[in-house]
Image 1 (tube, rainbow, N blue to C red):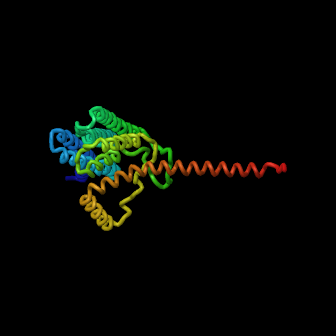
Image 2: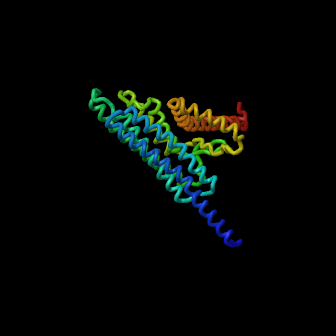
Image 3: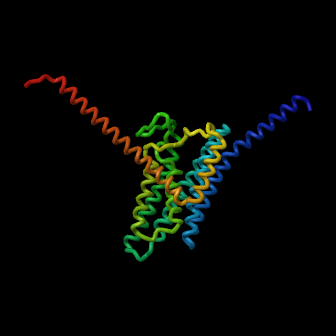
Length: 297
């Protein structure tokens, strides 16, 4: 084999490797879709029997789909294999796993198993309101995805520190993760009391609102794991992984509710600081006018 044939064979091998690298992030996206599909099927099975087990597995599937969603984009950027096909596939996967699956789970877990012994009119109103609010969550999630896809360097209405990167509105995986972690916190046991269904109605609606809001949520994109020592990082990840598996119901819920209310707190803190600046500016301006006015006494 001459030198030209060797170079041609090497180029073909590199081209095949390159095509294979494009499949790698898509495999994680497919894992995301598989988790969403599994969650939907488990939620449907809960209607016919053994609701607690099926609903718990449906919630766990949504939570474990979040790392798949986080890794596909990161791997695509690391391997320089980003493509329009991958972006569209990722958005469709998120719409299924973090839009359809959690809205269906929230509806069945929170409102389907309410007993008929409660006031019939209240029972009907709760189920109708639950279906409507869960639908609004789905609309808010897919709207958040559409805005993310068309936005370039979007800035929140309450800007944060310049050395940090933020999401505009709560990401749809975070909203879905909070709903799923709440179900998992209860080990999938469905809601059987109207006074529990009403707060659940409010929380689902709040998640939908936060996704379409323009408030800032920390993205964590400035974290660079490559700068850390690999053995220390591996040791830390092993501890975190163990704690998350051992105390998954509490840990997932704590992460979900902390992240959700971090955006609310950031918006409230920005409003308070802005109001104080306005008040301080008004006071200083008043003192300046008084100092310049002549003493007429």
